[in-house]
Length: 165
Image 1 (tube, one colour):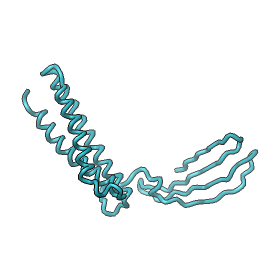
Image 2 (tube, rainbow, N blue to C red; image 1 turned 90 degrees about the vertical axis):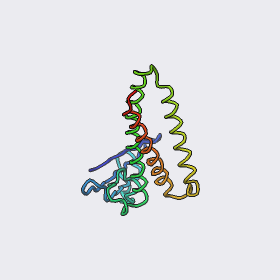
Image 3 (tube, rainbow, N blue to C red; image 1 turned 45 degrees about the horizontal axis):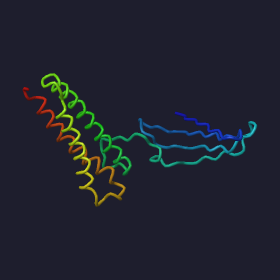
Image 4 (tube, rainbow, N blue to C red; image 1 turned 45 degrees about the vertical axis):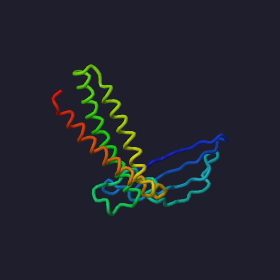
């Protein structure tokens, strides 16, 4: 896979930057940046290969076995878990709101309850993890906390959805 980017400045001088990405089994293993110095009138001045750490530009991690992942991978996977739980919750709440609109004519109370839950979840997780706010693993722990509360809310909403109205 070869990614190329060209940036132009105001003086008709541009930088030609090429990234070479090595992918093995769907995972980014190495990223090499070839830095080409300013090009004037078609003449290349310097080419310097530079190795960049993979974690700087990696956008996807294999989240199966997390104990071997670097911290950035663990943060990424925890955020992904939260996004999945949030998406499941949104699907259930939308279905439940539609059911309330059909049966009761509106879903205002359910909307307020959901907004209150989201505020509670955010503040509760922030309070639980305040002591580690400046630590590099804070995003992972915060996402895990939000996932935990979201899964509890999913159980509550699923129970409500199953009730006969």
